[in-house]
Length: 348
Ligand code: MRU
Image (tube, rainbow, N blue to C red):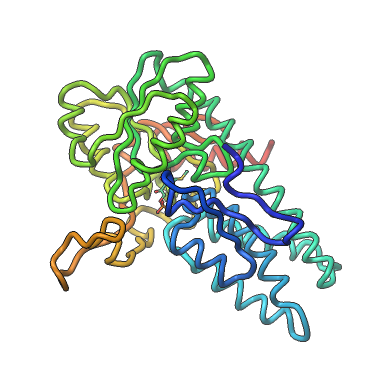
């Protein structure tokens, strides 16, 4: 499914499938300026690191359009800084804004109208590129899964979290496309329920067998031998291979280690942040308490009780059997493998 993020040339705005209300309702959200784009990112109308990157690229164009008039350059800088700060953990957000700015720096001859046209076409290019990268992740990832595997995944690293196909779900789709029979266990992923709502939804649409498990069933399922592999996405991978992903992922990885289940991370190189030395330096987003105190409109905790809502945790590199990227499956030691992957990409 590649229709959940689209740019409407007619309306000159970004149109997003609202992931807050899936799978029971199909509603659309229009980003017309920086404020609405930041709102969509922060409230998770759109979420998932690569999809956040694609949205941010269009967001740069919308910011440029909004900045029109006398003194537009200074206004644009402020809008882009606000956009880049919308969510702190997924490095694809900053990556996309930086890429747009670097491309602009390489075209100093562009006037205001020229920049707007250039940025819209570059955002569309980044959007299409993400589709290709996910397919490549799928081709490489298919090699780490065996015919007949039951694969556990956490959160949603699927088509909805990317431009199409997905990263972790791209690995699963790649194996299925290669003729392997794969069953999926989708951890429900409290509190936003990306697994229960989104992973289950898109795999069901594709006809890939999926069962939803409570997050706290992971140990039991692994102890019973019901999980052959774990594949998850990432929001930021540090230079040493430590990988930040949805809260609960590191617990799954620790259990996988205990029960001897290979644990893989799938992500494009744009999710690898070589400026971040290790996982301790990755900023962890702290989200509104209401996501934990309520399920939908129903309050489930006593009035006024304090809760934790850290949105991500970091899985140490030593628990990761391989990182599946568009240039291949990286194996430990990751510091070398990551450096080589970027060299390979630069030569393509
Ligand atoms: O808070 P979210 O839903 O944006 O978190 C998403 C994840 O943790 C995904 O696993 C990650 O971004 C990879 S998406 C291909």
